[in-house]
Amino acid sequence: MAIQKVGVLGCGLMGAGIAQVSAQAGFPTVVREVSPNALEKGMGSIAKFLQGGVDKGKLAAADKEKTLANLSGTAELKDLADCDLIIEAVTENLGLKRELFGTLDGLCKPGTVFASNTSSLSITEMSTFTKRPERFIGLHFFNPVPLMKLVEVVKTVRTDAAVVADANAWCMAIGKTAVNCGDSTGFVVNRLLVPYMLDAVRVFEQGLASRDDIDNAMKLGCGYPMGPLLLTDYVGLDTTYYISEIFFDEFKEARFAAPPLLKRMVLAGLHGRKTGRGFYDWSQNPPA
Ligand code: 3HC
Image (cartoon, protein in one colour):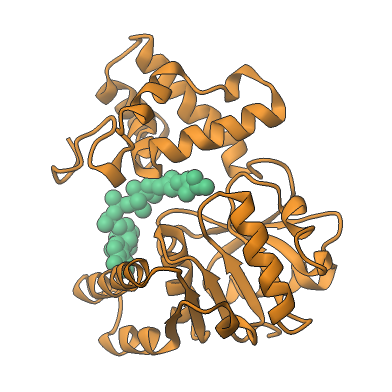
């Protein structure tokens, strides 16, 4: 296994999940967050998830301790210098990603593979922020990372075949199934999923059916684990809106355009689970 030590940039929802699954699979994993508060919050969410696994009988208490022992947090990029793989999971801000990858390029050993968990920005563009585009790849995880089995492995026209093979082997080692694809906005999953979520908001906005009837229709009629409006809340209305803008900019197709209601709800701060309200009220359990 070419990849032994893993670095993760960002300890938010996705970064924390990625760090957890890496450490849980036995890889020493360093997570970098700028603010001590954000690091503490992310590490706390990992410990909570692992404890939940122990309480549900899904994880041995000793494995929880081993996972936590494999994890370390830092505010310093230089602490990631000897990692074999670094996965970026910071906010979708290209300027920030440019700065991080540019700095890490100067700090890391030549063999380090750089990966981004971006859901909609270009892996090819990010690879140009470094002098190692052949060692740059996309590794796109799904929320909630510890439960969702998929990783999209995204190669650019410059990525080395050996790096793709190492990334696939690592995904398998952390218990995920990898699908391989090229670098096109949204890769496979979001290319198909985002228009579906936007259409659900559109038909709700048009009054075709109630929120619960739309969600039940897709849940019970198609066997999806959650309906599209609950899923939009779960992913975040702000995130969905942001992704739709990038898609629309790339493809100029109406199906990627954000419905006015989505924009208004984002403006009103109804971002879904993360702000407590979206299409559902998340102060209730289950959301009502
Ligand atoms: N530790 C270990 N296992 C746990 C656990 C924990 N802390 N918490 C839950 N589990 C296990 C449960 O025991 C259960 O296992 P089982 O199937 O063997 O019984 C399984 O995980 C599911 O857990 P729950 O029963 O608590 O929850 P649900 O059955 O309600 O499933 C869900 C929750 C997995 C979130 C499911 O609703 C789902 O799959 N939803 C769709 C999520 C989705 O589509 N995500 C992708 C979003 S798009 C994205 O991320 C891309 C981005 O770029 C936008």
